[in-house]
Length: 265
Image 1 (cartoon, rainbow, N blue to C red):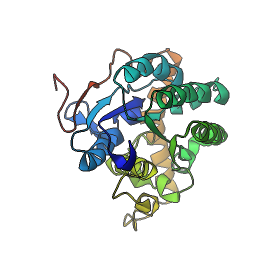
Image 2: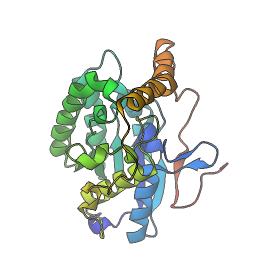
Image 3: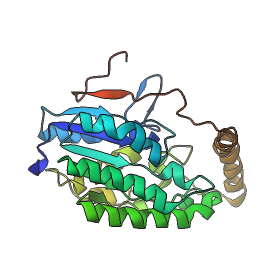
Image 4: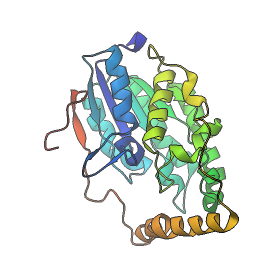
């Protein structure tokens, strides 16, 4: 529906869409999808919102597990953000990953939904140890741009902006957005969707960082702590064939008024 007047918003994706990095599993997650729903509700108070995302899911799993339920909810606006888990896998195939994403674009737009997505920032700017994945990010972004243009999907181009890799927009694990980062993503998607009141302020610098710059020794020590605390456990799960999403289900599988928690929370 035009002018941001939506009544059913459905979010598909992995941990970023689920809201990891913005809240926790005890107090509850928020995330960019919840924040975008709030922005839509400011324009369309009657909007209902469902979040089908589950952490750890590959693009093919998002398509297989979430697309059918999403279509059944008959959204008039949807977000599809998937593929990061794929590009971190050893056998990453950008064409295969993008094909799954594009299939979701095609199905949702074909059903009449206004769809929005993002390109991914170069995480190697905040996690230098991940430098080998930079070409993969670029390859996936290129394919997302083409697929979005082909299906009329609103695209939030986060990747070109330096602000997207400001460490303050990222959680301690450097894989998920912080609360400030999730807010920026929601603002980017609102801008891509032309929601009334949205603008390009999300592209601007956060402001001066008053923290003292770390020396080489402290920087190296921080990298080692990050590798031990986050990278190591992630690699161990991969070697064991496990996922952070094992045993999890969507936290908001039904359309509910924005601000209303799912049953059981």
